Image 1 (cartoon, rainbow, N blue to C red):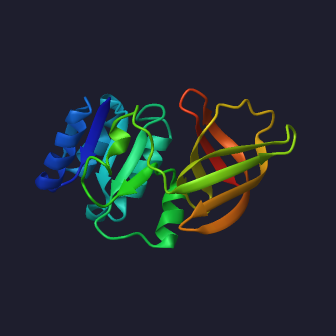
Image 2 (image 1 turned 120 degrees about the vertical axis):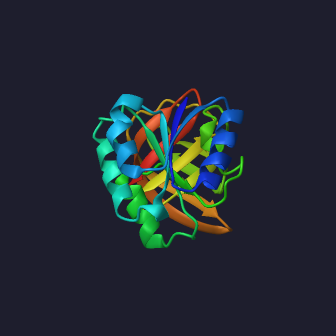
Length: 196
């Protein structure tokens, strides 16, 4: 895995790079945002980690540029955020296609550098499948106003992209949703849903 790290802070880049290397990733570090942006097509990274507070307006340009396909296909983008995110910022990140963000530079928070690592669970999820009469259970990995990511306990075959009845439980609070399937990785039992 090739990881592009963009930050002017050498302490941050060194810590992220050290953790990435323990997962077997190759890292490329850029201090200058525009130089990184100019070289993304040539670098073709699998993953980009960006210190967004250093570039409060420019990082959105980079995201749109990468999501256009110029930087490669399926490039993951993660933002380092020193302050907790507001609900509005979380929604904005989800709409822009950010894969995630982290506040602490620890091996646990940088789990996404290891593609074989299980995603951390923040709660439980139940999906009701009216066509088959089955109820699927799993671990809730992330939740926003627009997307749900979970890891299922079983590997079902879905007969429809629409899942009308979904219940999630986070911190002993239950919420109901309906959603459609955006991505399903049967081998990892990983499911990404778009909330309707």
